Length: 444
Figure 1 (spheres, rainbow, N blue to C red):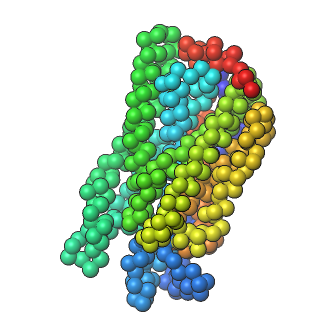
Figure 2: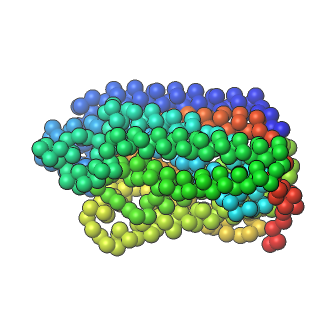
Figure 3: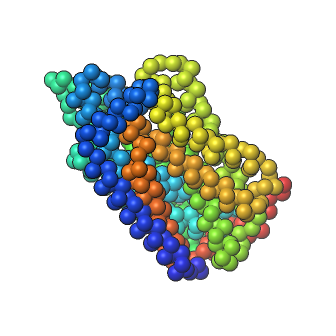
């Protein structure tokens, strides 16, 4: 039985509180920016010589209309608090759901090697309702127009009588409309929370009864979650990320966003499993299990690279203005984060983890897991910030907001997951494949 140490509990609370303090400081700094400061920021962006839009809404702004341009820039500048929180909240919610997807796949495929780390995955799934609550709060702020992350929520854009009528957004309004958006958000959060709870409860029941019938029900619920996740992960990628720029569309995006979260989720499983091993709570975890986790971490990183490159290459090759605009804006205004993230998400994992033997090195795998997590935080930053904040992100308030968001969500994540882990029996003794997991040995 794992016991949550007072030191780790204190660390998680310190991270959470520090995140709140930094976020609050960044929020007040951001909201102290007046129209004069925004105008200076606009002038600085134009003086740089980079004027490609980062969002389709900017293509409809007449730069000669100073008032309209200023209003749009004010929205972008003051989007920073919600945008930074959105990028981190979506990643941690999605990675928890991806971990439960990985968990469900283990049962559906009757895998044996992973049984001793199933409780780690169940504990990570306990974060889902907490992460979902953050996203629902952000949703409420946006649908009540106290936040402006989603351009398509402006009612004037779907009013044919309005001067701001947008025919493309009007055609998409059958899906992108506030009532249906709210319903979908509740389906994602409540559905994923229910499945995470049900899978934990059924797994506990298998331990108690050691019944083949109960294990069969665990298998069936796992298959059910895989089906739910398949539809929900696609839809929330559209809703929370891609609809930020409603004029732009990519058929690769749902896979790109999902694999980003999956790679991060596997990195988190790896870190927690190694932590438990080093603290003596999970002695059954050995080099062979580490090797398989590292193998999945390496594979998911390469799959992310494949989806990123395919999405980028197809649009770049076609060179259609409304499509490549998505990348032009990121090249010009996010050059410090857009391509450099490939170093963390592709280059370093490829160079370090391609060797089979290195995957058994605990220190190297820990470092690589941290590198991958950092890389995908930057990846989600690149997904959210250009379409919401635009070019106005190189400011002290945004730095405080981003660091504060990461620390707050990370502190909450550690507290929830490790507290739940302390209430679970680490070894699922009722699982019929437990013996296979204990004697598992990778042959190479």
